[in-house]
Length: 241
Image 1 (cartoon, rainbow, N blue to C red):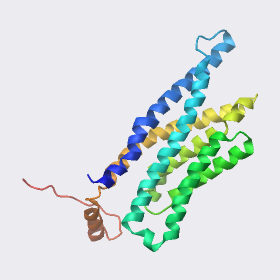
Image 2: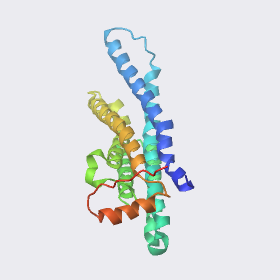
Image 3: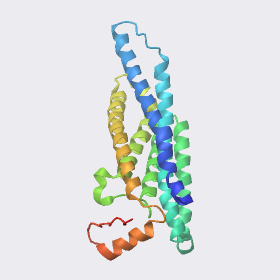
Image 4: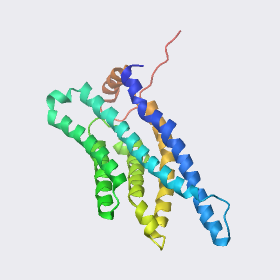
């Protein structure tokens, strides 16, 4: 494997080592928090009250980790495309725009963490989400547009949007006496959890489908020679010993 191939593994490595363990911990704290709330309605709960604070804090970390790993997942194919196709010499303003978009998205996420007023939370959440979408539609990103329902990219972007939204409504959850925001948060979090399960499968599939750097010229040649831009099945004959 070349250095470029190892760089492609940064995104899945962080997802496995950081994001998915965090998801498990956050789900556990969320379940304990709800059980404590229900038990307090009937009497005294034995679950310590600190689980609620832990759920909020770990949830903030999880949201940031998901947006961060999404940016890393987008950065590799975008800059790999820029370097391999020498886009810098052809379209320098596009490269500068992409770099500024990465910086603006990261800055918007950091400001979202600090924002307290609803207006500014909405503004920075919108800017963060818009940055992910704009970057996601740059050349080089493996999107599977023809199969968007089972696309690792589209499911990942949708999950990141839900995490950004959850981060933006934290203050509203605690101020709402009717628990409407809490109910919305629970529903969206359950949907996001299903998306993360899908991400584990689609991500594994894409790692198998995206060729290594030394394989790509041969795969492209086979595609041009046998497919000619038409749907086809490439059969590889095993080498004889």
